[in-house]
Structure formats: structure tokens, C-alpha cells
Amino acid sequence: MQQKKGPEPLESDSLLRPGTLDHLESISISSDPATAAARRLGYISIIVFGFATLLIIAAVYGEATNSPLDKRPNTFRRRDSDDDGGSLKFCEDGDYSKKTLKLAYELPFAALFQDPRGQTKYEASSVIKVKDSFYAVCDSSWAISKFDASLQPFSTGNVQIGDPNRDPDEESGYEGLFYDNGVFYAVRESVAHHHQNRKKGKGKALPTYHAIIEELTLDEEAADYDILDQCSTEFEFEGTSKGFEGAIAIHDLNNELVVLGLCEGNFCSEKYKSKTGNGRVVAMRKNTTGDTCVWETIKVMNVPSSADFLDYSGMDMNDKDTVLISSQENSQMWMGKLLGKTDDGSWDIDAMGFDLDHSDRVYSFPKSPDCKTIYCNVEGIHFLNDEMIIGVSDKMKSKGKQDFRCFDKDQSIHAFVLPPN
Image 1 (spheres, rainbow, N blue to C red):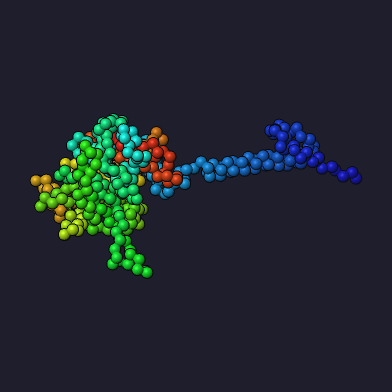
Image 2: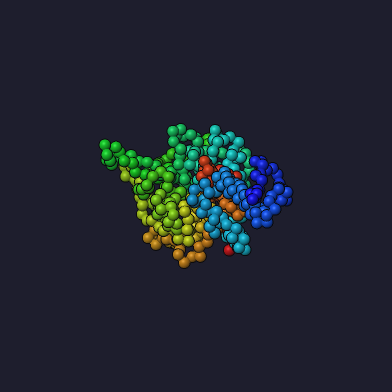
């Protein structure tokens, strides 16, 4: 009996040549229907399997090379996915204009000065208004920037006061600026203090960390300032990275100056970043004994939990006792009320505290057309008037720690319009 011949083997390159199922139909196969059907199914399976493999490879490659959002720290993934401004739901729910600040105008610090005095970066951290001018500090510079609210590029009135490199071995760490009775107060966030009587191990001095408040008088004609005093705060921090991020001045019942310092971290700590809504404001009064001075802590106030932020980056209060607190990481601003002011304008420190019955509001800084965060580094904020605020932004974090969208707004001054009540 003649053995039935099986199907002829395919040429080795037959499946590599361009073709479709019509091409496969043209290949010589056995006339046996079952065998032919099985063969067709085999060809189709090979094609489907190959196509699926290519899709998987493309997806894996794309994830590895084109997903900067997934490489960012958790804080930035959170901001792009939560309803605090990063999702389309936030922008398209019909209330965007009621909960978002509107940009009026802005300008990079680099375009302010005719003479930048050698400065190539402006890590802006605080801004205040004194009379008709604005003053800002950067934690990377020892100078104080003065400019007009109109933000005219390269105006002769825009100047840097003080030597930006006053101490070439150390950055200023300026994170707060306020003004009282002719004196500017610049707050250095947190500075290591070394003590010979606090040792650990082999006699090594163990540092403590405290903010330092510098008292400065400005000579604007000479574009310089004099240091009247430098006093540490009694309040202690855990390190140099999470100290005071803003400060304002009030006067107590005895007309003594009291400083309200805003802690950057929740619980004034570096450890509890994820425990949002636990901001703190520290009230301090200066005590001078002989040649030493210290800003003693007299009260610590809880910021209302409606300021549900990962960090707290700036603070201001107007003459109506309305308080602004910004968050760099949430790209938002809280507005509330501080109680405790008497009829003569002084403050009763014992009675002072945030109004928990006040209708607090949280506003987001403007978003991109695809509803992504673009104001990623707003630190200092200040009332421009009752309808507008001015803010300054720090330098964008490098090495992929922040999304590329953050770059356009960094190291800049911004004027925003508040939503109508």
C-alpha cells in the first residue's frame, strides 16, 4: 500500500516574506480538509502570537523610556492624580473658576535686573510689600530683591540690595521676610548650632537646629544693608531642611513685637510628611540678656486641618486678619481667619488662634490645558490688594524629581487674581 505523503515542508523563509492570509492560501497544502484547516489555524496562531509579542515589547519599551511621571517621587504622582488639581475631573467639574487663582501677569527674576550682580539662579522663597515696593529673598542669595509691582523688565528701580555672596561659603537659607517699624527681618530656615556640652560617642559635639532671624536696615542708595542683630529661635527643628518657611509680625498687648513663624513640615517635623493637615504656626518673642538674644516660644497654634497640605511654604495676613498659607507640593493656597486682635490693633496672645468656624477656602494655582500642575514651586505669597496676591517661585527640582512642566514657572514672580466670593 502506498504511504500517504504528508504536506510538503515550507521553505525556510516563506513566513518571512510579506503576505496576508491570501498569501498563505496560495501556499501548496494537502487536499485533506482537516489537515488544511489545521494548517491554516497554525499559520493564524503564529501571526497572532507574533503580533501580540510585538505589542508587549513595545509597551514595555515605552513604559521604560517615555513615562517620566512614574519616575517622579510619590508626592508628584499624587498631585497629578488627586482631585486637588491634577485630574481632569478637577478642571471639568464646572467649578474650576471658583476654586482656582487666575494669572494676571508674571516675570522671571532673571528679567528684573539690569545688573544681576553675578546671580544665575533665584531660589525665591518669600515676598512682602512695603509702601509701594516689593521685596523678596532667595534661599540661595544673601541679597534682598526690590522691584515694583508692575514687574517691568530691566527697570532701573529693580535692584538687589546687599551682597548676594556675603558669605561665599554658605547660602543664606532665607525662607521668610517681614517688616516692622523700619526694620526688615530675614528668617534663615534652620541652621546647625554646635554645643560643646552636648556630646555623643567619642566626644563629638551633637548639633541642634534652630532658625536665625536677622534684623536689617536697608541703604537703598548704596544698594546695601546693615545687620543690627542676629538671634536664634528657641524652637528646635530636626535638621536643616524643614524649618520656618514664612513669618509675619504682630504686636502683643504690651506693644512688643511677636513673630509668627510657619513651619514647613506637618507637626513642624521632617518625619510626618504624609500626615497632611497638621500645619503649625509658632509665636515667638525676643528676649535679650546681656550680649545674648533668643526668640522664645510663647505659643504654638494648629493650622486648621482644612489646609490639608503635604507642606507649608508661605504665609501672609492683611489688615482684616485674613491669613494666606501656600503649599508648594500641593500647588494650592489656604485662606482663613486669625482671631485675637483687640480694638486697638494689638493682639491678645492667650486668646489668639485660627477661627475654626470661619468658612475657610482652598484655592489651586492655575493648571495646564491638560489639567496638570505647572506652579510646582510657589513659596512666598503676599496680598497685592483685596482682590489679588503676588507670589514667588523657587527653582525647579532637578534630576527628574519634578515633572518637566514645572520648568516654565520656576524662579519667577507671579500676580494672581482671587476668585470672587
